[in-house]
Amino acid sequence: MTSTTTIELTEFQSQTPFSEYHPINNATQQNIKGKDVTVEDANPTSALSPEASPTPSSLRIALTILQPCLVNFFSSFSSGIITVGLPAIAESLSIPDSLYLWPASVFGLTCGATLLIAGSITDLIGARNVEIVAILLLSIFVLAQSVSTSGIQFIVFRAMQGIGLAIHIPASVSLIAAGVPEGKPRNFAFACYGLSQPLGFSVGLVSSGIMIQKAGWRSAFYLSAAGLFVAAIPAFWILPKVKGNRQPGRSLWTVLRKDIDWIGGVLASGCLAMLAYVLA
Image (cartoon, rainbow, N blue to C red; front, side, top):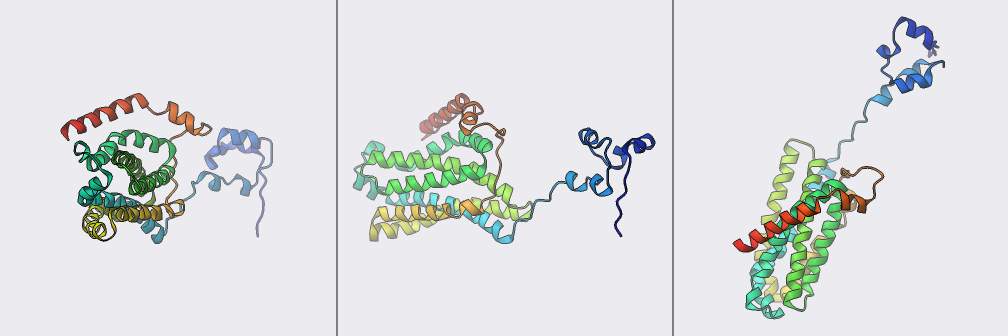
């Protein structure tokens, strides 16, 4: 039998403070002062206890691991294509001898130079949105390389692909850390993530030689771009939502303009680029 006990707050406070029995804040006490408080209403358990975050299913965890690994795989696959097919590409696009090594080296140069700024943007905006943008940029610029008509175009698109990878790296690491439970699953996830890059490069070395000989060097880039587009499609549903450090109520452009140290980032990126260029 359920009964409702009515308590006069003034009488109850004269004996024992109400907060010792029910830890309700002062604002709530002011709202209920002078009113009848029932046992059901006075129980703050549901309001004070945080909601337990649902544990992701094994399938969702597997897809969260697979998606960034696929992006790494196909992005490195294009590097393997260039390593093997650079003579055919240079001959087809009339790349001069002075720029012969740029298609292979400019990718790592732009990626390393913009990594710091990309990490800052990821922290503010949120990893999921940044990852989706990164995959789309990688897909577009790999496809643009396949339709290039000159060596300068190919080198520029290759440099832009490096910027896309720089945006992808911090976002994907954050997503794996947020979407995969600690312990063995997360260790396995980062192991797969690290393996995907050399694996994609190795597969690109082997398969691109066959594809270049049979169908031309552009077909290998078509395959890489298609793989990146396929990896981008499920990203909208599988990737966990990771909130950034942006304060609520502030617009995206305001955050990007004021909360990022663009001067320091550009200086650091420029120094890294110059150092890499001199050492290369």
